[in-house]
Structures are given as structure tokens and as C-alpha cells.
Image 1: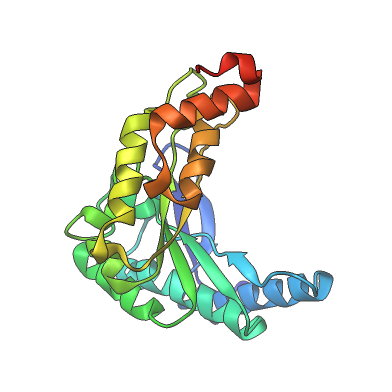
Image 2: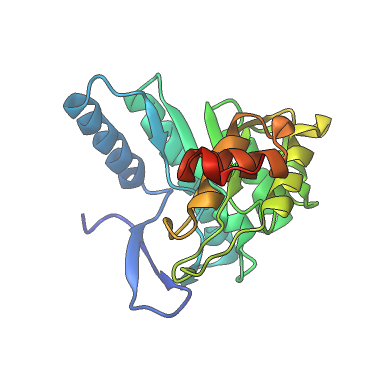
Length: 239
């Protein structure tokens, strides 16, 4: 498609260049709509829930004007969501909020963030506040409880290479209970776990599963007793 517009980027400026279709180009929407239509044909009994990626993150762009970046930041997700919705009217989209938690280039200015949220209003999507165990975006001035949009409370816990035994149960519990009891967080509709590396602390991930049901009913002492019994037998649980 030589007549379409493409943009050059790299991962944090550390990799070789890759090219993306510019979101304002008609081919961008056509690509995602066609992809979704093919998916629906192949899997007609799907749940209609789509992981629609998320705002550009960890990306360095080249040869773009500030106006181009404004379009790129907002339109890439609005057009993507619209394309999926046109192909599957029952679609619910889930978007990663990592771009807001980790934005070393400062691409997500308050103005661009607000413009993105306005463009997605009423489009049946949920965004993940993916790093609430470290940097909860909903509590920042720019995030402001995701400005009334539906969102999920997320835990990363482990990045790639974090294979040591770790996990602060008390801190995680406090954070989860705080959002569950916060009336301003009424649009928090779920709890997610999105580690880059899993399987190195069974207790912590079991604990997250317990929190996901209702963190207000969890106490660390009783949880640890229950975990010991379930994993090691009744003799391992303190009386």
C-alpha cells in the first residue's frame, strides 16, 4: 500500500526502526476492522471481549510534528475501538494503561490524556490501571480516577527478570482495600494481574486471587493459615 502514510518508531530508541500505519490514514481502520471480521468468522462463539492493546507506550517516534503526535496519541485508540465495534457490535474492549504509568518521553500530556478519554467516552471499553502496586494512575492529578471512565485495579508485581522471591502482602492488601472503600473509585469495575514474569512466588499470586474476590474480607494472618493448610496439609496450619 504505497499510497498510505507510515510513521517510523523504535522501542525507547534502543531497537532498529519499525513502521506503523498512521492512524488518520484510512488503511489503519480498514486493517483492524478486517482483522476483527476474520476473527469473528473463525470464532463465532467468542465472548466478544477484545484486548485492544493500549495507548502507545515505550515508543520513540521520528519525523513527526507536534500536531502529528496529537493525532497519533488520540486517534490510534479511538479508530481502533471504532473499527472493532463496527466489525463486532457486541464488542467490549480492554485497553492497557501502561503508557500512563511509564511515560519517559512525556508524550501523554494532560491535554492529550483528556482528549483520549473524551474520544473513548461511551464506547464500551475498560482500561487497566496496570501498575497500582507501584504507581496507581487513578490517584494522580492527571489520572483523577480515570476521569469517570471504567477501569480496573491492576498489579504488575514482576517485570522480566524479576525471578527472586518477592511480594509485599501487607502493602498490596492496603492498596486493594483502599480502592474498594473509596467512593471516588465507583468506576473501578475489576481487579487484574498482569505480570511480565509469573510462577516464582506461588503464595503471592494465590493471595492476589483471594483479593480479587473481595479485599475487604481478607486478613493476612487468617489467609496465611488457610494457605498453609491448602498447600501443605492440616498439620502445617497453626492451631
